[in-house]
Length: 450
Image (cartoon, rainbow, N blue to C red; front, side, top):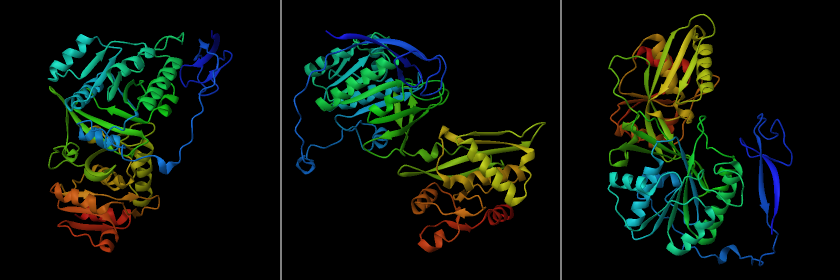
């Protein structure tokens, strides 16, 4: 028989302590240590596992399973790797269950079996969703079970290719006395699922809730235990959804996937640039088009800025779609190098489409939008800006310029502003009018004279 042991676990970060503490030593949060008890099992020595040379492992059976949704395959690095555990996080009602039911249907249509374990919805609720999505497949097995100890038996009986757990916060292990969703339950259940996935070579999708801060609920160790972490982002008032990979042991974490919620479920958006370009008025100032590079594809994105006279107190700096500190840096460079009195103005910046930009090559587009609003001068509607802005006011070169230029030409734009000497030295062949600038002063003279 095992021995009952009590411990204290932080609800915020998962820090474990043998005694109660008012302040967590891990995350410095107050009053987050809660008592939990678990049963310690007697340690039994397992059979020794033989070490295998790397070259002796066959690579013939290494493959990826397509989800049937190319945008999701892109974020996963090419598809689902057997034996992997994927954690899908997102706000309530964003479409996580809808997305995974569509993935289950595609795999089931191919003759493979799928287990859909739901701890939140009844089987009739899932059936209603399947009717809306026109999904009728006997290879999808629904389970309304929360006990994680029984999952291994179902897998041995049904032998699925994919197991979906919706959600990880609702399943529990009877050996842990705390309620489902607690730090101990999340850690234990995820460890059990990871062990089942690796030993049986089965792929798992885990649905995870997010907090009001937009991060996955539960201890941080949860993200370390799984192989892939994907965030499903978007606004409920808009139909577009973004899939963003933040961790991937089998591929890049820079990829994004774009989907649209419709009455028949989630539909892929195959040409994302059209989504991020809004139909602005022809004479509207403060609008600029820039070319960002997300993962393996270029995106043309519209940036909007509003510069207004500031009231009493400090001027406001608000940004949607980029880091606010990055906006402050660009404003400081413009004020220092151009003499614009932006310190007396409020500056608001918005990136259309709900995407968050990290690519430094969009600095020039952001600066162009701010200058256009400050000077109340409309920028040419057929012009695209790309370049990184340094603290010295120089315009630095951008990577993958040839791919960006092809996307600009494909979208019908005629002019592009890029860092100096980048285009001339490489010798790219396009039908665009390429304008080169080396400093922010040259750039302002160009767009103001134009």
